[in-house]
Length: 369
Image (cartoon, rainbow, N blue to C red):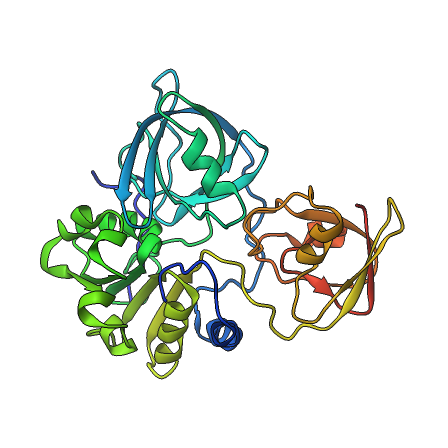
């Protein structure tokens, strides 16, 4: 019989970001997303409730290069008056308000026991959507920045404190190490039986390598240039019944893991991704913008947000995965197929919709935009 105890009141003291995907990977992503929806036990079926939009004005106290070949930097954010920052739990992220007005999410990758500052890491993507380039080019030591949160869409559930598992295995790919680092730190302090595989193209491309290898024999580092592309067996050594598996990284890696776990009874799979999911089981529909009368056609394989941005490039958005609420709009008419994980039943009944993932459950929606 599993004994569940209350969670501790305090915290104790390519596959790796290719900038362009080929057609085969796009098709693979769509299949993988279907498997992930089937396999991921942590996937919440009910809305997670209202989130805290509390804003904090912080200062960049430290900036460090964490991986040269992939241009990853870490930033340590502190309160200007030196006060302690709000408590957070491994897996949490911050919403970062950039000087341009962009809003981006970055996982907290520091120590939950150290409330003097928040550490985040950002990989520069020159041909991305602009947020990472702005962070690299404008956030220097002494810069002021506003954050919202912390919030947690990828919580670490400790064995014996809500998880049925007896041990934990972590898999991280490249920058996917960021939410995993606080998890392994907590697992280590609490004496949890854990192991980890950390993957990347080469040792020069994976951030926080010295910090990760400091945990010793529990960590296996695999690089493509020395070991080749990893198969599921390489990523999941020793994983079997009564194992909780936490995975963060690029879609192909998480898809390989999800497909393997599908045939492993008794394995809990918890996963997070850093890119917008492909549309699964989508049907075409239209969106009418109530303020102008414009009608936008949304294809079966595109999100409403993608099509809205073509005519409203200043429309607010951030995560593109249905948890940050930045793209929320009010629906004035039409049925909604809600695919987010955060809106409450009351908010949905009031007409709120996240256009990054949710769709029309019919032929047309009229939104207040």
